[in-house]
Image 1 (cartoon, helix red, strand yellow):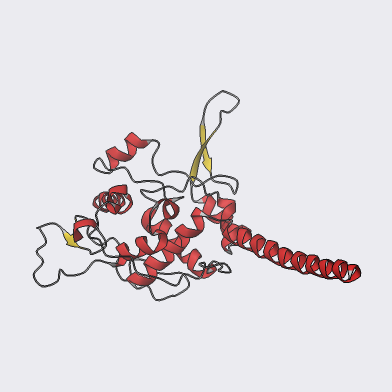
Image 2 (cartoon, rainbow, N blue to C red):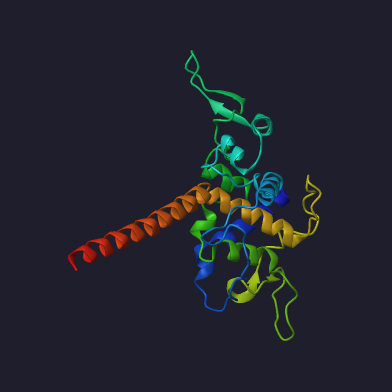
Length: 252
């Protein structure tokens, strides 16, 4: 229960819009994300590790209501793996022939169920805090991946001359540099299935990469379409220029 309250409190601090109101916060770290830029693609291994972090650390409080189990095929999982993950969840379905709702194991077409039935249940289980859905959180926060990563890895000892109140933690990326939430991610917080070194920085980068994918699963499709459009325009420009030269050559 303490762990759930801890994660929920972190969510309120991390994802609150007021976190961006103060002007004394340190600028987020600039991370070279593989999916950044016009030609960037998601690091599938990192996204899969981020899924593991989400399931083991975040899913007890946070939902991903816009992600279906079938979407996991897009990050490199095969159908059997996606079905196995779906089967670990219980979803509400119905009504049945008797007009009653019933529970069943998850299927590929189901969306990841929220950990709570409603907001009041979520608040009651988390000391009054309401853990937000994480589907679009990367897009919804200024600084996106860089901000979330920086805050997750920004906890440190207060510098000389800076006093942090009892029960608070120093974090230069949070307004006032003082945050009540203890560091939510530590070294070895997750034992990666693929054996990747599970440092705090690696865990933070993987879960942020996963959340970036969740916020825009069609990112790569959009970029490929953009490249095709640019190539088409280049070819069209060349053809029009050739036609123009031909026309004017005949006139002369």
